[in-house]
Image 1 (cartoon, helix red, strand yellow):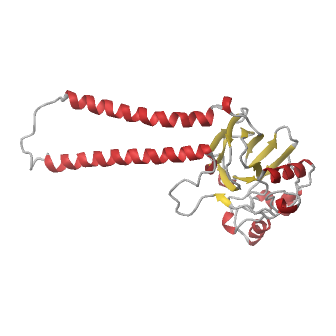
Image 2 (cartoon, rainbow, N blue to C red):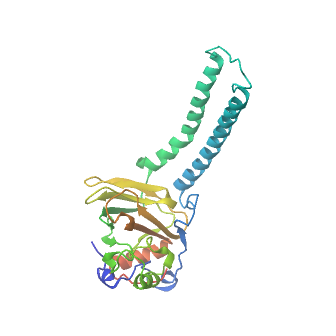
Image 3 (cartoon, helix red, strand yellow):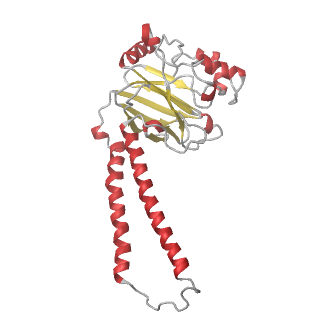
Length: 292
């Protein structure tokens, strides 16, 4: 399932196969990637991820208030009711109003959280309301992804730049750095960039059909809020609608063997015009190397 297997032989990467004019010279910024010592999510690039991002912050505020409240109670108990400050402890065993309160309040908090988290979950998993503009089948294998644009007669494999399949050894070498630069990536994108990328149009619903050929993998793009296990013999689905153009990196997120760490995912979101030209070139097999 290759568009052009010679790319793996020469170790060059496909960045965006765009034909003609400004489209082929279009510069794409890397928007979705991990950063050193990062503590937060990647900037959201879809409505789903924006919802996840906001939900996470809401939960952060709730658990912060609860943690502070419980800590204050613990300090009160430690200093006010220790054996020195309170040598004669009370003998009661029940306090009905207090017990009702500490039962109902957590229930109310959980219902409140559920009223926000369940709609977010349904938005990700309810495909009856998803009208796909682009359908892509992603098949995980040890250790690369194969992609098929359903109904478009376009299919290719996607390997990490620097993997043995692209002439590397899963290590940064001058040759691998040259491959990254030739494909329009930075040296820092090693372990993230792939020789061929999934190209999709901005503002369009992309439905991913996810499966695997050998063991369980997982297709995940953090900036999209998309993650779906790839199980051999089954086809699962996830979807996204990117709201900005750029390059977004992901990884296989299910431990799948020795080279699990070398199974990245690259998605490039381009304009509708650029996507149409890429698709036309891909169908014709005229995939060309271009800087991003």
